[in-house]
Image (cartoon, rainbow, N blue to C red; front, top):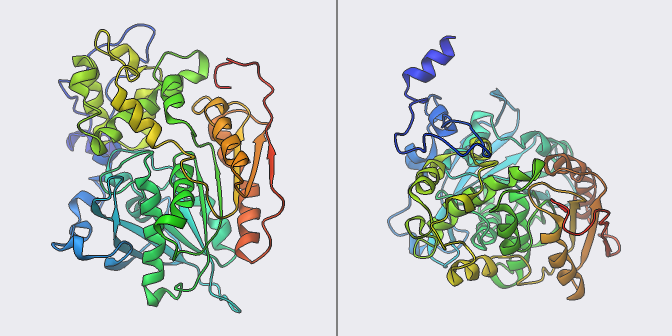
Length: 431
C-alpha cells in the first residue's frame, strides 16, 4: 500500500488530458498506464537524461568513430542485487543512420575468472531494447537490476568470456535502422580502445534476439565496409524481421488472436523512426488527432508498457482518410532502405526463427534468409518447431550459446545449411 501511495504522490499515475479517453469496442481497452521512466525517477541511480556523464562533448565531430569520450566503473545488479563482476561503462562516438556524429554508451562486464593462452573473447550482447526512452537502455537497467535479458548473459560469463552490452539504439532511442549496426561496431572499437580492459586483441561474437538481432545482424552486414578493424568471429540471431515493409503491412492492421499483439510494434516503429526521419514520419500528416495523442504517449516508455498499450490497437485505425504508410513513397523507401539484406556479412551466421510468430511472421523473414543463402552467405538457418515469439527467445538461445562459445574458442563454425520448416498453410496469421 505504501509503495502505491509513493508512486501516486510522485505523479506517476497522472493521466495526460490529450490521451484518447475511450477506444472502439474491438480494441484494447487499457487506460493510460504509468510509464517505466516515471518509476525509474524514484530510484537513487539517475536516469541517462538526468546524468551529465552521457552529455555530448563540445567537440564531438573531432572524435573518431569508436573513440572513447569518457568512462566510469559501475555496479552491475540483477533484480536489485549486486553481481560480483567488474563493470566499466564507455561513452563513445558513433554515427547515426545519416552519418551524423553521435555519442552513446556501452557496458563492459568482465568476470573474475582467469583466461590464459589467448586474449579473452568478447560476446557483444544486443538486448531487445525496443523502447523510446533512454532510461530503458541497458547502461541504466544493468545498474538498476532490471535488464530483462540479464540472466541470459550469465552462461557466457561463467565460461570466462567478457560481455559487451551497447546502447545500440542511442540515447535518442532509434529502432530498426542501419544506425544500430554502426553503434554496435563502434562499441567494439571502444572496447578495443580501452587498454585497461585488456581486450584490445580480442575476437568478438554478436548475439541478439528480436530487436537485439536487428542490431546484431546489421552490424555483421556493415563490418566489412564500416569497421574492418573489428575481428568478428560469428553472429547468432533470431526472431528478427527481414523485410520491414512486409512487417509493417502485417502489424499495422487488425490481426486475429494472439497475432493482434503485433500492433504495438508499429506504434514503437513510428515513434522511433519519426526521430530519425522527422520530415517523412510526420504524425500530423498521417494520423488523426486521437492517433497523434496515442503516439505522443508512446514517446517515453519502455518495451513493457508500449506492448501493453499498443497491442490490439492497429495504427491503421488512426489513419486520416485516404492515408496509410503505403500511400507515402518516402515512408516505403525508408522501410526498404533499412530492411536486412542490403549487404552480406563476411563472417559466419547462425539464425533461427519460430515456425509461428505472433509478432514477426516467418513470411517476412524467409525471403531475406533465401537471399542471404543465394548470395553465398556463410549461413546456418533453421526453423524452430515451436511456436510463439517469446518462447523462441529461449528455445533458440540454447544452441546459440553452444555455437558462439565454440566459435569464440577457435573451433570451426560447421557446415552451412538452410533448414526451413513451414508447416502452416500460406496466409495463416503469424506464419
